[in-house]
Length: 272
Length: 198
Image (cartoon, rainbow over all chains, first blue to last red; front, side, top):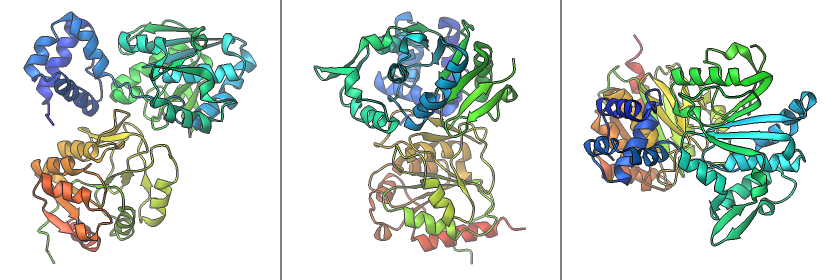
């Protein structure tokens, strides 16, 4: 395996920032380095060749697709999805009959389908508006298409069973030519849009923000910036859900949230 | 006794293990000298979708509580860390952990190569790497990184391993410093500890 020294890494982040407007300066170093090495190996490039190739606008979309991590599952951490269904969503419904959800860093959409299935089983799918965003337009297209490798459905089905859904995951997709094609009516109230958490603006207010295992790719400076944006994007008493091994303990605005569920890392905004 | 020619430059210990390593780990953790000064960073292959139970089982036997760090948690002296289920665990330059859900490596997440490799990058020659019993080659490359960066490398004696694929992979990848039985690894850590008592 190749290694990349910090000077070359800085060269690449500077170039991508100046030329294409994406800022990876504050990404967590170790995983960002591994993603770069992965790209070098995938395209069989030297560092110098990658730097040249990054001048081409057409390569940038591919670069974004590989530099971001798009490994995800439906109903990953089934206990989290149970808490969402049994506690959090009913809590929101006490005060609002329409719910707005921001799914930040939605990747290939497995968790977008998870939340849609969950809401459908609660009978409230059409009372909810979901905005699903990602930096990478290719992956947003994949999410929209709702087409997954049939092999991945084994794990998704296992997660769904542990989530204790009311039916079977098979109720929500058809198998066509080795692909699982998701029921597209699940996405009727979902809009996908390109949004960069690093540079993007605040664009709406939400009752719930889902951003699980996304900020782990950022350093603490960037985590703090993004959390400020999340804070501003939430209604007072709105909820923020992060990954089970992420924590707000060290962040600047920790005192503006309370922990609602510590095991599943669900927080509630209590101060503006 | 100064069998291993150690000194007090070391800043961390990393341990990798897989199939058949649990008993060895337990023996090491339950026989650690009190107030062992270095952080012990463990990456053990484990069931991906079982989040609870493992760290508790290890803590019961260990003389120091074992914790699964949160993303960006600082690495502290004398603490024992375990890579959480279904996440890769990296050591970062500021001496803290980063977690990630990247693709599996060697069919594993957490992958031992990632934890060992990033720890080697950060701690250089101030790292002790230990690789125990296991059924795949994960960790072999990580041990090579440790050796290449000047750290000290130890594998469990293959004849003592339930499955020796993992230590053998490391022995093939690099020139391992010490091939030891678990009891000798305990002795090694006790000797290392002596250099930190002033």
